[in-house]
Image (cartoon, helix red, strand yellow):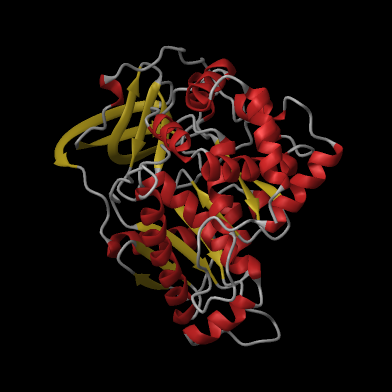
Length: 425
């Protein structure tokens, strides 16, 4: 099936989301400290009548326990179909999740027919998910030999030597354990995984760029990895490979090479944090998750300890690259209302001239809140985690949610924030 996407405003209403069939998420490249716009795969789009602005009722937000087969017309007018469980049903369309955990937004203006079945909805098992990942790579024009590597919580389809996928799997599993332990001790209880998490590991930048093009994330093609919310998968490539060296064939060799490239570990951890948070009850896919929160969380976890034989250890180390950028922003460009503009909407992250500074401040604010106001931060995380898909807050609602957790005196908060970051090393 052919997929497409387009660049959109991250502050879109639910009506506009269904109208366009996709939603933006922003991520950052650790190495270049520059943001990459992560467009989602869009499976249906409407260009004719605008759907209504009615909010779905609570009942319409309850995931169906059984499978529905939905036929619709794509943008080119061709009839296609998808089956899965309906997550949201409204007068202007449906949001459906298939067995690979891909999300489909299908406006009612393109919906042809729906057949409800009594078949219980189930996610793919590891073998089925691995096959689907390879199918997607083939559809992207990647003609390589793939193997599927599974761990307790992940399914990886890789065109690399097995040592690379094994090393990555070990790192991801350590990340799961560390992430769960960290938040359990800070009053945020993560939910169990509903299904194995999908990961693509490609052998080189050329294959990676093809996948980014297939996923319609062109800005990602020159990066080092991304998490695609729609498909719920991480896409990486073998950062330890080079033209001068043959591919690493042992885990020990992968580890040695990774230690020479700090971004190799940081990229994996950053994208893994996104995926874990969106799958363990911290963030809700297609809900109004503030970008400063989702990206701040990923950057909080991404700083690697390359002296560790494990390639990464410790959580919440000072991210020196982000701190350096934040201090440069603070000296020359930061405005007194900067925290407010960061929180009230996502516009700074969508502006090429402002995004890098927004990312650095998102890291700094996240670091400050977790380190000095963890109880309030955990309460705020809980409130955000309960947001429903396809419902969007206005700027005042976002500010009110933040103030409910951290207080209304943003002047004092800003003063405390700057005093705290001034002492970081």
